[in-house]
Amino acid sequence: MPTGSTEAERAPDQDREALKRHRWLFRAVARRRNPRLRRTDITVTDERVVKRAVKAAALGNAMEWFDFGIYSYLAVTIGKVFFPGGSDTTSLLSSFATFAVAFLVRPLGGAYFGPLGDRIGRKKVLALTMIMMALGTFCIGLIPSYDTIGFWSPALLILFRLIQGFSTGGEYGGASTFIAEYAPDKKRGFFGSFLELGTLIGYTGAAGIVLLLTTLLGDDAMNSWAWRLPFLIAGPLGLVGLYLRVKLDETPAFQKFEASLTHSATGSVVEAEAEFSHLSENAPKKKLGEIFAQQWPTLILCIALVGAYNITDYMLLSYMPTYLTDTLHYEESHGLLILLGTMIALMCVISSVGKLNDRYGRKPLLMAGMLGFFLLAIPAFLLVKQGTILTVCLGMALLGLSLVCLLGTMSAALPALFPTNVRYGSLSIGYNLAVSLFGGTTPLVITALMDAFGNNVMVPAYYTMGAALVGVIAVACMKETAQQPLDGSPPSVATKEEAVELITAQTQEPRF
Image 1 (cartoon, rainbow, N blue to C red):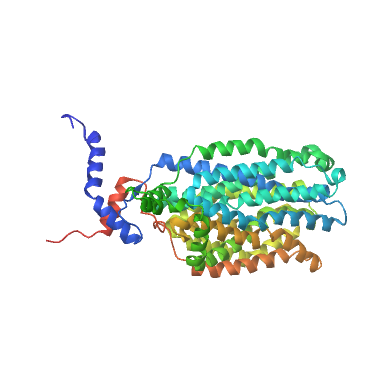
Image 2 (image 1 turned 90 degrees about the vertical axis):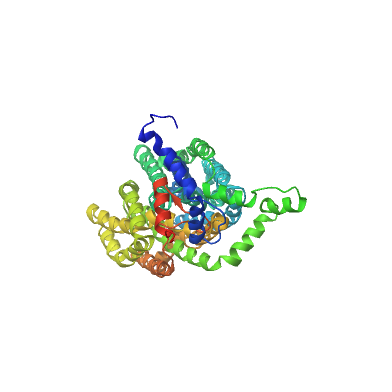
């Protein structure tokens, strides 16, 4: 270094020299924290790159859930357009049954896209799911009504809902894995919370557009032609989401995993085939077999967590507008407006929940959310039942506070359950099995139960409490993963100073 250089100019070189001298210590720490790793270094993240990756993943997720949320908020209208025969309850049940159809194929989408993401990378699969979701949603807006083409109208609706569901099967597992593998260990909860912020933005955008169209155009126009507009918006939004995802780099954790598999070629055909066997045609089947054979206890835990989480989530964000309109006879615009306010409030606090679970742990926040639903569901629905603006808002606030504890924590907790080599596939399969069985069927099951029990308006509260009880047990059984490296990945830190601190804290000084 030239003479006369300042202390600030020498500092970066000194940091690099310190890291170089302690490289063997980095490897020792990584192996101690994760015995599966060999000759790997601590990952020092670039905050700008992390923020760009989180922003793109969250915005892409927002656009996916905007597409999916539209159907929820137009359920009553869709029932009239595509299933006009029979009573209003029959049309609504038919609409929710079609809503649930998309969830039946989500496990198939998860089983396909998940192992594919573990094989060819997270980035490519997330771009593919974005294209499929936008295409399926856009095509729904083009379907003629039942009065025009009869039976083919609901048949086409089901077909495009299946496309939506299949593509969504690879969305959450991939997006949460993407953010988790980019984020430093001590901020994974904070950055992960932005994924669910994207979900809320998507739902809020869908609810806002439906509310705006309903207010400006009225019910007759919505039933006639205006219901198509939110679906048609999905086309250009899908192109924006695709652009954002294509511009991303692959996650550092996956790059290191790929490098460990294809680190060098020795010239032997047999050895070369062994190195690249993870790209063979049989690799997806092998991945599925590995997931179910080796990860089944964690899969069961994941399904229990996600099942409880999604029942409460879909009850509040998808079913509640229909509950307020169809059961409590609120005007549709009023129900959507209240839900819109609730989601905006959740958006304002969700990143704070992410910081809290980084500081105090994932389990305390998850347990608070599950216990909140178990203890507050009945009081909340009794308040909503009163029907005044104040009591409905208070009831929604109780449910929303419980839900935000889950929303701000799950996206960091779930990817940490599985190792890097099968993380995308395992999480996609476990998540989508739970969503298919419990989440997507929530509006249909609650509507059917209320009809069976004489339109008892407290049925949603009892159903939510049952789900929350399962969630309490599942949270009690999971391990704490806050501020710890992902299984199968080296420690990830935000700065070089933090890397040196990690080495100092976990490595004893030699004694002479």
